[in-house]
Image (tube, one colour):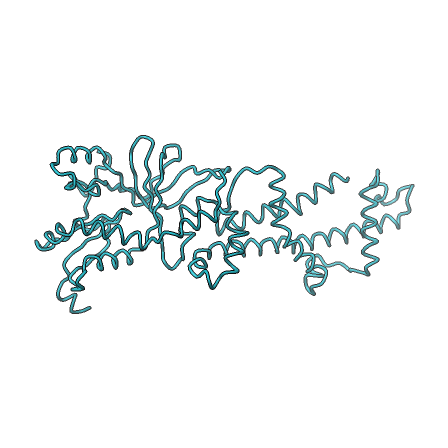
Length: 332
Length: 69
């Protein structure tokens, strides 16, 4: 019976809160994942559950509504409540608990057994009420954790104003977030800047791909398993080397002319084939246009018009030798 | 793999995406300024590939559009 009780406390007071916290937080921001030992998992859960436990305990003891609902029971006096727990403790430590609960045993009066049942009912209801508010507090904590994590970039840009929040974030939230989330998303930057992540991926077979990170995937150990890209292009190294060898002047060949667009909505690259990853945080199109216009128009003549092109634009450059806009030859 | 996220965050924040892009654009545009001007002078648009993969189309601003602005 004691083993059963221990399991109950472990599951409902430590394991479920930890799982609930991870699940709810993952709606906002992916947590750092790695295979923990049982001790590490328990430590994490205890750390996560400490504050909600204290809040729930305070609530069920002192706060008007939380004190009685849900699972309302006639509370009685302090000594009556203590009596209930004494009865339950007797049941749990008894070598034959059924003797204290059956309706008409030979060894115990039936009124005592009825009182045991009533005590059990009240204790179970109190436990259910406490767990209800405990899990609600866990959910609130996960929501605060997740929404705070999403505002990290904004707070970082105004460090002097949000000093305390940043300290809390960096002490409690940041160490639990996946490092890939920092590297492959705009997590670290203010949302208003609309930064996106562009990566150059050198494959183990020598190919070089470039594209925007649409998504990334990690395994249970927190290891990157793959990256999903959009607006992908591949560098035609052979054509570049050929052009360089045929050219009289090395400077006449621009490497940017040898990127081939891949007309695929999404392009997945598995971790196994990645040799090297160059991550670049890139400002939005408006910033690019404004910068390009300023650099071009040094004399402020307003003579240049700059737009960011899309692949549907007529005249959009593909690569040397490209002829058919309907069927781009991406791998030749 | 254990990564110090605070250090990683600080290291990333030390660079500025806008400043990096400005430097890249300055380098590319200055290297191709003559080519750009020649293309625009012939009445065509010039397509320039930015290091992050975006293509920008540079053209002469139409006088009507300029007046409207």
